[in-house]
Amino acid sequence: MNDHPTPLDRAAIPAILERLYGDAAGHTFHDVPPEPEEPPEYEGLADLLAVVRQLKQAVRGLPRDLEHVYGELTPASVHNVIDRLPGGLGAGDVFIDLGSGIGKVCVQVFLATAVGACRGIELSAPRHRQAEAARQRLQADYPAIFAAGRRLDFVQGDILAADIGDATMVFLCARLFGDDLMAGIVRKMATGCPRLRHVLSTREFPFPGLAVSDTLTVYSAYAPRGESLWIYSA
Ligand SMILES: C[S@@+](CC[C@H](N)C(=O)[O-])C[C@H]1O[C@@H](n2cnc3c(N)ncnc32)[C@H](O)[C@@H]1O
Image (cartoon, helix red, strand yellow):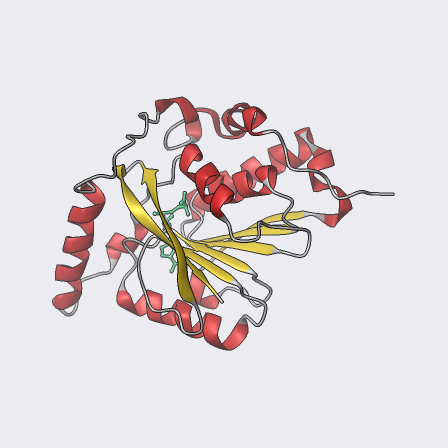
């Protein structure tokens, strides 16, 4: 019988991430500066980029290229988020990262929880290829983690065209996502995600039918002094 695998010990995960991503990662687990205990007074480059985004949106006709800026949450922050997930994640859950980059958040959630399926949707072909290579390496080296039909999938394409109808939890590193993209995501969730219970977003946004249940500070390469992540729950 194929039992549902138990989540991996936290201590084992940094080495697996390094094995999967090596030098190809934006930063490795150990490059990440220690996280300050005090909440930041300002949030660094992410703040500046968010202001630029607003200015750009105010000027019609300019490209929305800020949405494609890359910055990944630190592994320690992803662990903190996992610890705060309301009700945790189990075999019946589907976790989807909208704008998944090279896939580290999905990989960590897949390793550190009992989630049934993780999926990352990413527009950039090179980032998607890195995510898919990491997935293939993980499946080859640690097949037991995929037992009982557990799935880890990366899909290249636009969030707005992706199938997310089975999602129970959606993650958005969305600080630089524009209003049109956010509104499109909200429409998709409102009309096509009947099982959705939680949205985790680094951009505060009204998600109809969901209310803020928790807020925490997370750290990334472009917000080394921290930024907020809102947890919205049904
Ligand atoms: C800030 S990065 C976050 C990466 C990852 N979620 C993390 O936290 O480590 C945002 C990602 O969203 C992707 N993105 C932006 N707009 C998108 C769209 N319309 N469809 C799919 N991906 C998109 C960008 O290419 C980028 O890789």
